Length: 84
Image (cartoon, rainbow, N blue to C red; front, side, top):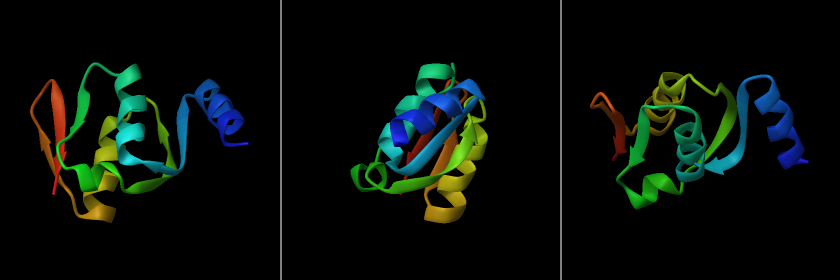
C-alpha cells in the first residue's frame, strides 16, 4: 500500500517515505522544487529514510539527513549537496 499512501500524501502536499533510499527521496524532492538535492556519496544515497515531509520543505529533509545520519549538508544556493 506504499504507492497509494504516497499518492494520498501527495494530495495533502506531503511525501511519505517508508525506508525509501535518500537517493529516491532526493529525486522526489527535486521533482517539486527548484533547489535541487545532490547526494555525492554512494553509501549515503543508499541509506533508508522513514518519515513524512512537506513536498516543498527541502530544509526539513536535509536537516533530518544531517541530524539522524550525521551527513554533511552544504547549501550552495541552487543546490544542496549531501555528502559524508
